[in-house]
Length: 290
Ligand code: GDP
Image 1 (cartoon, helix red, strand yellow):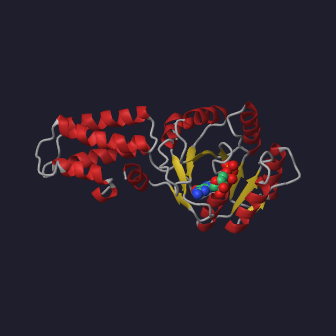
Image 2: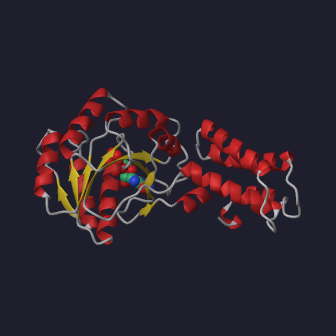
Image 3: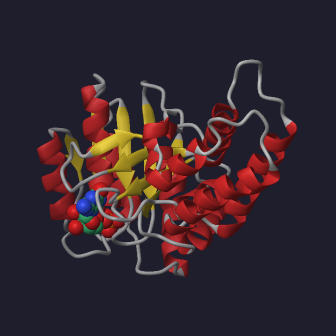
């Protein structure tokens, strides 16, 4: 991480350490306060912010800077390492045959993310297929088909069927030549029992290698309940954060990562199929602290 990636006031605070050979508790407090301000503004859960603050303080005061390292660089390095520990590494996604199922509430961006991820895998030389099982939201089939067409990937859905489990079963058969199956599921406005029952039934038939939870970047502390419920029912292996092209920084999604003991797989940065990035800690950290 370079200093330029940080917000101006954090950079300025770190710069005040430049000439110092010893770091005082007061110095570290100032840096930690700046970080806390940015993270809370970015919707990071207060308990996670507190844990991070404690680790930074403890390490900055206890660890001796290696010879020749300035106080500023020493603190910067600790801040960076602790931020990486907070946001985690990218969810592992081997470029091989696999089935991925998406879970999340309505409007979180599942259908869009399914097409984006298929596009991403196709650019990596694999043959993806999107299977749309959302029979709940009117227009879901048309939207998913349109997005899959734009991504130029195989698509299966059935606008006349009303049993998502059957669609999933038939979809897997119809697209058996594909390498990567991405199964989109229906959401609901809230965490309702029938949503959880339905996704459990689909999961049983699909037997995914990975379940990814799709969260809107603007999600605040609601991330915790969603993560807990979906993790208990199907197990969550990774998180997709959508709508990072807006003003929200996506810090709330870290609660879901923490709750499910998982990591972030993809970031959505727009409405088009190519508006997708693999999660990288550095860019995300800069965004949170910027
Ligand atoms: P679903 O109900 O979870 O399947 O959500 P959709 O995929 O239908 O997305 C809901 C709305 O959010 C749609 O209008 C999408 O175009 C929009 N959307 C999804 N991902 C992104 C994103 O990364 N950026 C922006 N700006 N809009 C997005």
